[in-house]
Structure formats: structure tokens, C-alpha cells
Image (cartoon, rainbow, N blue to C red; front, side, top):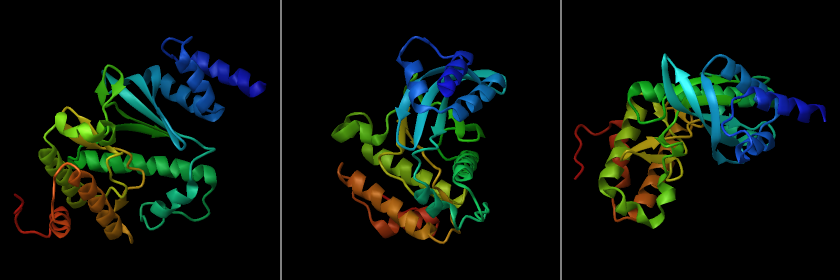
Length: 267
């Protein structure tokens, strides 16, 4: 009972739009007391002005819309919150071990999530500064990462999977494919990262441009498994776009992303 009362108290402290709506119920159901305290600290710093509705609720993380304030301007933000109870830690370890940026010795379950959040933030920042289309990362704290919101009117931009078989009705699919490959090349050559889980599920289409999301698992290109992760990303890409008539050579695309080719001989 004490936790429930405390959760209610922190929900009252957070500025949640339409507090009597379903949004408040969702916050209470999916966020624990530790997370609500962390959200309140971010809110007290002025980064979060008003919490909005859920963009997505999943097994490992929930994403919420919020009105934010960053570097002197009001901006829409997305708040990604990893759940302590249900996150699949063994999957996280696969991508953390071998990353020279992090010391994995004697790390606790809780600290693993904090490390994962830091890794996702640092990957996003590295990609953003290199010129890759990713949400601009703003800050992170404990199990929370805040980034610029991609979407309109508090509705998130769709991922490619959301279009189903109708993608070609909304965009030039061949041109979109080329843009995705170009972003993969910049990610690899300038940011020195491999996404490591790229598919139609984590490429957003925003203002006719592809944006890579969910980059917690992304690894440096000197990671022991970077090459196999890159090959998997390319095969996922070719598999998906082949459904829309885009046929490309695997070795050619891999070579272009790595910068092996002297010139771009693509059609």
C-alpha cells in the first residue's frame, strides 16, 4: 500500500496532461516507484515540461511523448524508459561484452540497464554528430533516455513495418533504399558503428527520410562480432526491400557501406 500511495504522490508531482485520462493509468501500471522518482528529477530540472501519452509500451521499454525544454527552446521529446523487471539481460550482455567503452566486470542486474541506457545515448550521439538520420539524443538518467520526438501532433512517425505492403504508395521505395544504405555507410565510416539490429521494425519514415532508432545494441566497428552484425543488417535490408521490387547485390552493398569501393557504381 505504501508504494501505491507513493506512486500516486509522484504522479501528482509530474505534470501529466489530462490527468484523469487513460494516460495516468498507463503510467501507474508500467512504471515503478524508482522510475517515477527519476522522471520527477528530470522534470524538476526543466527538461520535461509536461508528460503526454504513451507512444509504445513493450516488454523491455516504454516510450512516452512529452513537451520538453532544451537549450532555451520548447521542443517535443520522446522519453524511452527501460523496465527493470522484464528487460532481457542476456541479450544486452551479447552486445555489451566486447565493447571497449564499457567495463563489464562484476556488474549487477540493475547496473546493466543503466549501462545499456548510457550505451544507447552514446551511440545515438555518435551517430547524430556524424550526420546519420537518428533522433537527436538530449540526455539520459538511470533507466531513462530522452531524445527529440519524430512525428507530428504527438503521433510518432511510422516505422516501415507500419506501412505493410503499401509502402510504395507513400514514398519512392528505390530512393528510400538508397537513403537507408547511405545512412548505413555514414554510420559505419564516420560514426564507426554498426546498428546490429536494423530491419523494417526500427527504421522510421519521417518527412520522407529514413531514421534509425533503437540503437542500444549498436556496436563499434572493431567489436568482435561487428562484421557478422553488419552482414545480418544488410541481409535484413535486402530481404525487406526485395518485396517491393528492389534487387541489389549483397557484396556490392556491403562493400559500399564499408567504403571498400573506390567509386559508387550503383545504378
